[in-house]
Length: 400
Ligand code: C5P
Image (cartoon, rainbow, N blue to C red):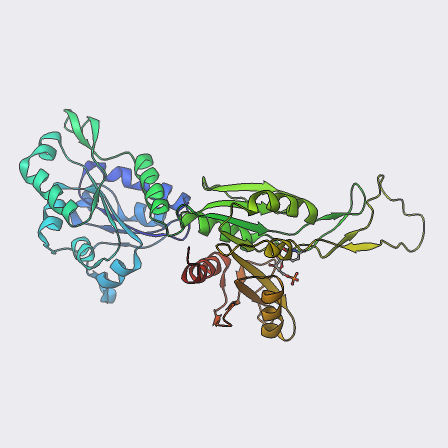
């Protein structure tokens, strides 16, 4: 859900700092890249080692990095983050944020950041309802910050009331829906084809290919992270996806893939054809397992339907279709011809020329060509990052 999202977690001095450990685990589990900034008071409640280990990143506490004399650049950290979450937020740090006081790394990052800021206060009930706290909270809300209200229950003081930091599970739920709802593809329906297709020769054998499905799955997840409601039509693949906005339709053959795509296509805004569909299938599938009786064997093949081309024929003006091309010669020219032939709005050209890029691996090197013949070249990257580039390119061209 939060795959690829960069979250900067601020931890203040509060007994609720022990919950930050669980919070980090849940953020990381959801796919986020987490960096932690602690105030000095937070050190009394939880160790930076715990937070660094769980976040898999160094934890920052001061402006400089110990003996190395390195500077923990607050501007870079602020700009790095897609979202800042301060949990627990102490009354003291709240007072600093509301007044622009920046006497520690966290409060300076807060002032430098451009991304949304979520604040999860934690304090004793009387502190929480004190007019100074109430007015500070109102002030940071007026800056556009979002408050995750403290919850009601037993407090460290033994008193019962409102002041407990929101439970980590509630914070994660909020962040996931916040990111989705703010997404530029909110309300849009996206169809993605992924993986290979298997074309049966007999009940136990098939013609297939080495497509892993990684590219298509990463595209489906990224589209969902941007707020789209996604149907992922997948051929046989070991990839898994667990995202409430992605509905997976498992298929085996090209015909099945076409049938499933057909049922969704008229309601789809954006279609991305990332599947490596088998071009041919055996003309007949033997009903029984074929015996090895002769020295040679001929399997007659017939052409499969071209799913992207078929749907391209019925594409309306408001629909946007994206295809892939894997070429070994005259790459750009062939890709551009394919774009026209299949009525794509954009085509992603996979390079086979670069080591480490391709079909079954984790990385890809692509060029994106649009129907105005504008070409964008990208570096060799992890497929999750490539998916982000492709979705960003779609967003700049898709106008509905
Ligand atoms: O013609 P070629 O296979 O190179 O075209 C690649 C593009 O067309 C990809 O986007 C692929 O998913 C799509 N395609 C398809 N159905 C086929 C063959 C290709 O949707 N039978």
